[in-house]
Image 1 (spheres, rainbow, N blue to C red):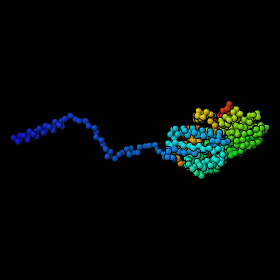
Image 2 (tube, rainbow, N blue to C red):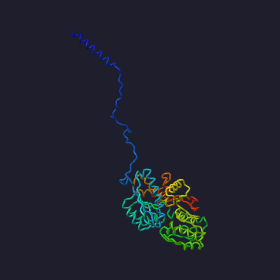
Image 3 (spheres, rainbow, N blue to C red):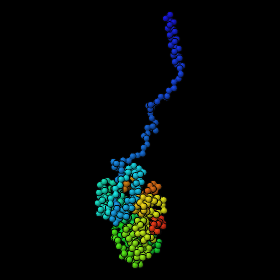
Image 4 (cartoon, rainbow, N blue to C red):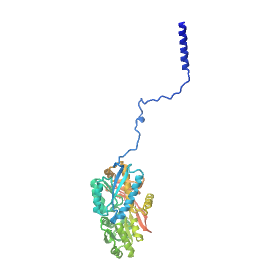
Length: 418
C-alpha cells in the first residue's frame, strides 16, 4: 500500500513539472551588458570641446587702454579715432568677445598735449592693459611709446611721422602709412601732373616737420623745385599772410601738410583771397573731417590718401554706412584707423589663441592680414619688421563736398610680411 501511494505521489510530481515547463513564454528585455571587456580606441577618446581661454580679468574681460586727443587742437582727430574704434569694440563684444572675453576699454584724454599724454599712459600702464590703443598726434606718441615699450605692451597708433617706427621699438604699430611710404607715391603723382615747382605749407610739429622733410626727399628725383617753405603753428587761427605768400608765389601748386583744423582754416583763407593754384595734400588735406570744416573751400583739392571712406570697396562702403548711421556724419581716415586698429588686434590674437601682449607684438611683425581672414581690417594689410603698413591706397579729389577716389594704387610691395 505504501509503495502504491509513493508511486502515485511521484507521478503527480512529474506531471506538475511538465505542465510548468510547457506554460506560456514570458517576454523579457535583453540583459544590460556591463563594459567589462576592453573598450575600443574610439570609446576611450575624450569628448572634443572648444578650447577655453582664461580671461585676463576675473570679470571675464580683457582691458584696452586708449589715450586719445579728445580735446584741444587734435579733438577732431581723436574723437574720430574713438568713434571708429567704438564701433569695432561693440561689434566684437556683441559676437561673444575676443577669445570669449569682453573688451573693456578706458578712454583717457591727452588734451592734445605731449606732456599730458606721457602722464596719462604712465597711469594707464599700471592697470596692466593687453593693448594701448592710441594716441594719434605724433608728438604725443613719440614721448609715450617709450613708456609702453618699457612695460612691454603692444601699442597701435594713428600717427604718421616717419620717426615713430625708426626708434627700434618692437611694440609700436601703425594703422596707416608712415611718411616714408606715402610721400614717394605723392611725389610720383605731382610729377605725373607736370608740376615743376611747389610751395610747402606745414605745421611746426613732429607731424608737419616730418612731412616737410619727407616730401622734399621724395620730389628730388623728379626735379621738382620748392619755392616757399611756410611754417604754421598748431591752433593757428589767422592764415592771411600764408595765403598771400602762396598766391603771389611763382610755384605751380601748393602742397599743404597740416593738422585737420589748420588745413581747413588755410583752405578757407585761400578761397577768400581768390586762389587759383592747385591744392595738393597727403591724407589730411582731403580727409572728410577737413572737408566738413572747410565747406566748399575744400572743393578741387587733390592728393594721395592711405585710407578713404569713398574707396570703391564693399567692406569700406559697409563700414562707412555703419559709421554714418551711428554718428550722423561721414567717417574720415581717422575713424577708419580706429576701426581697423581693433580688428588688427582681434585677428592676431585669434591666431595666437591667448592674451600674451609680447607675443601679440612679435606675431604682428612681418605678417599679412587679409579681409578673407578678418573682414574688419577692410583692406588687406601687410606689416613689416618695424610696424609700418603697406596696402593699396588712393588718389582722391574733393568733389561737391565729398572725398572722391579717382584711382586705386597698388601696394609698394617687398615687405617681409608679403
